[in-house]
Each structure stands twice: as structure tokens, then as C-alpha cells.
Figure 1 (cartoon, rainbow, N blue to C red):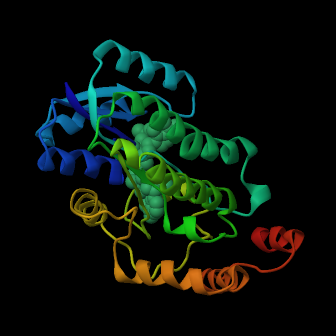
Figure 2: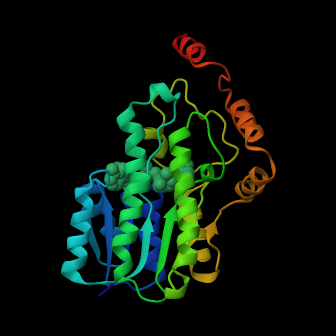
Length: 270
Ligand SMILES: NC(=O)c1ccc[n+]([C@@H]2O[C@H](COP(=O)([O-])OP(=O)(O)OC[C@H]3O[C@@H](n4cnc5c(N)ncnc54)[C@H](OP(=O)(O)O)[C@@H]3O)[C@@H](O)[C@H]2O)c1
């Protein structure tokens, strides 16, 4: 059985990966993973490939065993793995509950690493792994400190893994989106009255970001896929400028308070 596996498939870019992969290749099944069983099941109506709905919470390590057991039971050949599940929480560091901060690490890093490692024994030469990181992977981002750090992990891990897996002819590609119109922000910004992100130069459609990623995956040897010239310019820019300048520009763009924490907290209460 030849399959694709997509995490974070219930919405946004993960959902798009499912639909566009089913157009690109013939899979016996696409295994789709997220917490919302209803949203996953609804995807079948729009998808060409048969879907196996696998609702699970990837912050819970029990999900690794569920996945391991499902693979052992079906012994599939995995053609494509897309690790797209992820979330961010944006705020002053002391205003983000610790369990949310650790939850980002659990989902964006631990689950992504686990699903990658558990999938490898089921991959043959030609298999492809997509790891969704973010433009924030390229620079430290105040007020998204943990989120940005988790995405830097994804980028670094993907690039190194791509080199390690080259002898097995397994390709690993990171996808580094800029701002994308998805449900992501409903979860990321607790304080919608006074959000952290107040300025976006461009807001992309998830379908367009995923279309570019799939083209890069199947038709190039890139290890990082970037959609949009402004995003590419920023990736190159942050390589040239000192990080403290890059962070200053970010703080100014978003009108974020660049002073001590207690001032910020007083400011936030106004
Ligand atoms: N939107 C942006 O501007 C942007 C920019 C750069 C990078 N990204 C990254 O792109 C990826 C996809 O995000 P998106 O923008 O498409 O947002 P989204 O629409 O919120 O999608 C996030 C997906 O992750 C799943 N998910 C969240 N928590 C989960 C958990 N504990 N267990 C299993 N699945 C979970 C969600 O499904 P359930 O809620 O059903 O579990 C959903 O399918 C993320 O890794 C995000 O960090 C987004």
C-alpha cells in the first residue's frame, strides 16, 4: 500500500497539502492527522484519494504509539510525509502560560521529530519529507520567542536530515511560509484588541503557498521552499544584518514596547 501522511490536515496549509497531493500522485490512502475528527472526515468529499482519518492529539506522546501501531499493522510504503501540525502563542513571555509554551515545543518539535523517525523505516528511495517551519525560523522573534525558536529547530533539523538521508535517496524539504490566511491567528493571539502582530506586508493564501511547495518538492532539489518575493527578500536580508538590528526593525514594525517587562505589563493594562 502506497500512502502519504499529513499532520495538521484538518485546516489551513495541512488541508491544502492533502488536496494538492491527491491531485499530484495516486496514493492508495492518505493518512490524515489532527484533533478534529469531524473536520478531517469532511475532507473526503473534496479529495481524490481515499483518506484514513486518524484523530489524535500530537501533544500527547500516546499519539506516537498510535501511529507506530498503525504503521506496524498496515506495513505501508510512505511516499510523502508532511509534518504541518503546529501552533504559536504570541505575547510577552510572562503572559503566556507555561503549559502553552511547552505545548509549542511538544507539537512543533517533539511530535514532528517522532513522526519523522517513526516513518523512516517505511520509506524507500524517492520518498519525500516536508517539514513546515516559518519565516520566523531565520531570526529570533521577541513576543514569539518560543514559537520562533521551535521553528528554528525545524529548519535546522530538516536541512541536516536532508544531508543524512541523501544516501537513502530520501528528500527532506522545509517549507518556510510568511503570513498565511489560516485559523493559526485565532489561536496565536489571545488579545485581539491589542495583538502582537499589527503589521503584515503580505498575507498569502494557503493554496498558493502549498502549490509552490509541491512544485519545489517534485521538480527541484531545494531543501527550503519559500513562497513570495517579499518573503525571499526577508530570508536573505536577515542573513546579512545583525540579529539585534533585525529584532529592532520587527519591534518597530509591530509597535511593540521595547522596554522593561514591568513597564510593558503596566502599558498592557491601560
Ligand atoms: N498561518 C501562518 O501565517 C503561518 C506562517 C508560518 C508558518 N505556519 C505554520 O504552518 C503550519 C500550519 O498552520 P496553519 O497556518 O495552516 O494553521 P491552522 O489552520 O491553525 O492549522 C494547524 C493544524 O495543526 C493541527 N493541530 C493543532 N494542534 C494540534 C495537536 N495538538 N495535535 C494534532 N494536530 C494539531 C490543527 O488541527 P486541530 O485543531 O484539528 O487539531 C490544524 O490542522 C503550522 O506548523 C504553523 O506553525 C503558519
